[in-house]
Amino acid sequence: MVNNPIRVTSLAGEFIRSVVKPGDIAVDATAGTGQDTLMLAECTGSIGTVYAFDIQEDALEKIQEKLKIKGMESWVSLIRQGHQNMKEVLESKGVKSNTVKAIVFNLGYLPGGDHSVVTSSATTLKALEDALKLLAPQGMITVCLYPGHSVGQQEAEDVLTWCEALEKPFVAHHFRTLNRKSPPTLVIIQRMR
Ligand SMILES: C[S@@+](CC[C@H](N)C(=O)[O-])C[C@H]1O[C@@H](n2cnc3c(N)ncnc32)[C@H](O)[C@@H]1O
Image 1 (cartoon, protein in one colour):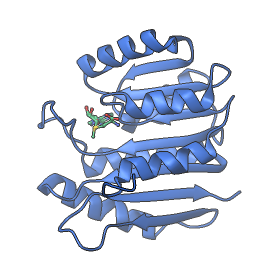
Image 2 (cartoon, helix red, strand yellow):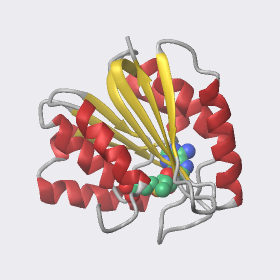
Image 3 (cartoon, rainbow, N blue to C red):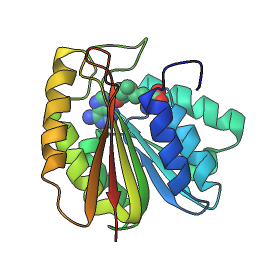
């Protein structure tokens, strides 16, 4: 980390590792290449559960292979559904409100994938509303924002405006590199009680 600029995804991971412990329930809202899914699975261990959402079947198939190699299949559930349906999908699997320790969003499109498959404001804000209801006391939501492209810029503005209106017990933070044009930024939402 010291010889390269700090990446928002790495920074999010540092916070998440400090919060998610063995036995916890965690959600990857944008599974993509599975990097965050695997990180969450390491944190929860086999006595916890990870639910990972993505709308791209081929992305989920590749993650399934990675899970198999690491022997993590039994505690990670891959869900081909939009994260805007997160609450009803998780409830159908027995996950109750106020029980999820961390929910990770890495917005935008999959690098090296189909750039037309991209997250956007309406579905992201619905997913964040669901995430607040699912989040456990002392839990955390991380959101990596990519305002460098037009859809991402609007989405980032909308997410930040939504965060500014959050009330107790939530606290919202925004981490941003100062001397780059439209850098990726990180939002962290804590639930205090
Ligand atoms: C920036 S990538 C995520 C990168 C991923 N966290 C990783 O570690 O590789 C964004 C992902 O969100 C997915 N996506 C787009 N819209 C979505 C939605 N409504 N619900 C769930 N996933 C969505 C895309 O298919 C893409 O894989």
